[in-house]
Amino acid sequence: MNRPHKKPARPPATTAADKAPGARVEIPEIRPGQSIELLKALHILTRDGRLNQDSRRKLKQVYHLYQFIEPLLAEVFEQRGDLTLADHGAGKSYLGFILYDLFLKSRSAGRVYGIETRAELVRKSRELSASLGFERMEFLDLSVQASIESPLLPPTIDVVTALHACDTATDDAIRFALAKRARFIVLVPCCQAELATALRLHKAESLSRTPLAEIWRHPIHTREFGSQLTNVLRCLLLEAHGYRLTVTELVGWEHSMKNELIVARATGEARGNAQARSEAILAELGLESLHERFVY
Image (cartoon, one colour):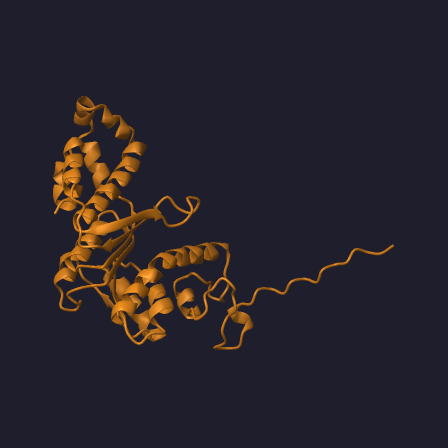
């Protein structure tokens, strides 16, 4: 009786430990030219160069975001042969590092600025960029207003990004981008608590005035509606300043609920009723105290 043919065992995935020092790690999911040492430093690869389930998910998310941003960078670079990008509220600056590594590293021009108020994170980013030889990356410990006025930054910035900038940090990035006349603005907002707090403060008054207050009567709805409304007001603000928007999800809902992606392109043509609609929404919901943040 013939025994069933047994398939040969698949060789184990190649890891950094299997390679000679300095050799390139071959992992199909990683883009050609991507720095393995950078992925390790960002904890996308494990220390021994492995790509486990969690890091594979992280890598997928990073590359998914890069697919949205790369055409914008290419458009700017094609038109003027140079590029300035500011990552506002940069944190550990992994977005700036990935963009530099995949797009600017192979080019002779272009500069990335990471803006972050936590001095320790700025120091670590500087050390990492120096160790990788990323000479056209700068990391600045600056507040929002200081970053607008600082001579360390150019008067205009081509692309401004803010990835998971918590609460009002996204609004700070928008203010910076408008002051720097950014051609493109890419936002992934996170943890919008300020507006939800204002809704709670005036909840009793709103319930007595309008049935619409039922939308945010329960605490979980207050949080969700506050988050939704915050991004709506941000979009209206950008449209009032002459930007055309694309609003979509960054990754599938199974990964994160904080995944709304706002891509704004400067057109110079403001949406005529955008500011008036913002003002009407704030008045209707009793949120006039937030006028300065969302209408200017």
